[in-house]
Image (cartoon, rainbow, N blue to C red; front, side, top):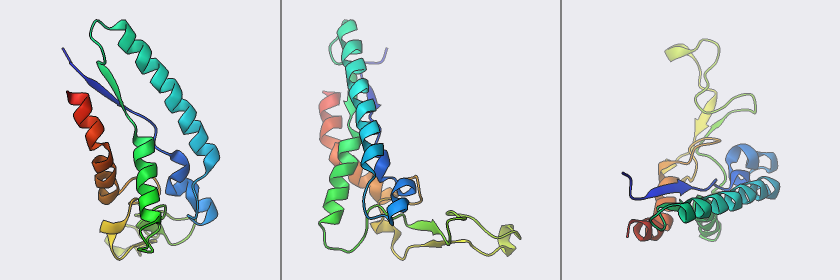
Length: 152
């Protein structure tokens, strides 16, 4: 059987670019983040209950992606690099378009209806929903001690 199960919390959904776009990517939406925090509290209680019902202790563990993302956002905001961690690298040219859209011609003949940032390796998010490679790497580095602890 499985000796350990890692369960991830919801990330700060109020910081997803699709939500943060409403205020020009300046701030996270605290209402959405409060909903994620509440969900994560209920998740923590459920995991504790599961662990109490198993013969082995701490079979189920939580990886706190909410805190990991928030820590990275705070680091990015204080870095002085000028890069906004809430703004995605790939974005539609207007609110009617999103990353990857092309005009009605489509295919190779269609004009791109999106722009890609100059340095994707600096972006936390690739598009309006998905963390970029750099974003996941930063979150992984933050979660690494928790992962190690969970494996012991």
